[in-house]
Length: 418
Image (cartoon, rainbow, N blue to C red; front, side, top):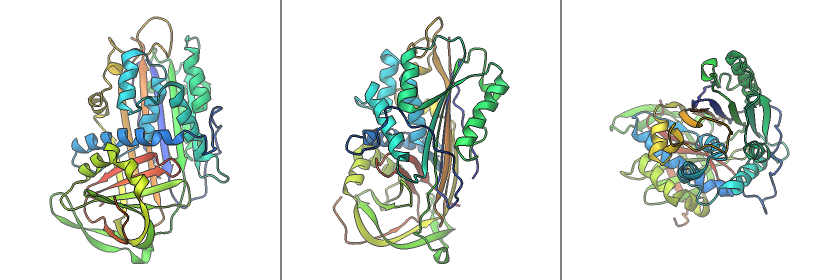
């Protein structure tokens, strides 16, 4: 797998989050990380599902904005970006916190409740025997900085953050953090941060990794054959189209058809194909406006046929800060207005200087392989159907969801599968 990296640069403190999902036939995997002290795997008490709707609302809104800013394929990880901002908001106060919470569609899921939801999602995702999911977090702390104890405790107890000292030498800091990331993503992500991401003002680096490895058996390679795919321009191009007859979760609205593909791990892959003249952007809008929850609640097992092209997607967001500001996160990026007094005490104002995101996704007869990373540097100054026949032979959406909660981990808009 290609290890692609994204660094999010905010002044003084580095918050870097990496998300690597690998859904393949391989067997190598990293050792299971520590579970959150407050995490609960019991579905009768778990709050992991509370993150499904916020991740969908935030993720599909962001996907639509990214898609409107480019004519290329788009793939992002709403879980990766949401996790970074969720950890950041534990140190935010006042209007800065309110803006982040609104953009993340938390709607009251704040404070301890937000931490509990993440703790339960992390725990339930990797609590099963032989689980193929691992989630790891770490805080790299600059010695001598008066961090607010509650910020440290929340990230340790609810995100199972591994506490490490942040070296003052930028090259050594980058080496140690990248080694940590590489070990926890089975070598898939090797360079999350670089020496240039650190400065004299850097006081903290926060790192998150998520690693999955699963397979499926829906597509016989012998049935894959070249078939036409209609681009948005109307041009028809030839692509390798995979074919399947199967029973699968199926949902349909006036805007789209959706088919859920199970795997041998805790991941469901949704193929969402717009109907008629509707576009993938319109399908994303429908899913983001409460439609994703409706799809999860109403999809029924139905026998049918599915055709979907092999995919290899790569994407780097060049306007993530702009899109987050459009979603309402404004003060966090302002040296004059940001209020992150819950991160560190002392003089100077903590604010977010920049935020970046990159992701890629491969889909073939063996399964799905996807990787994403997000980093931040923070500084001081429908009705049941009897059958279905769905052909993804025009632009469509792909959603990779955590099975138990339905939380979308990756979303993609496919304009050209070549």
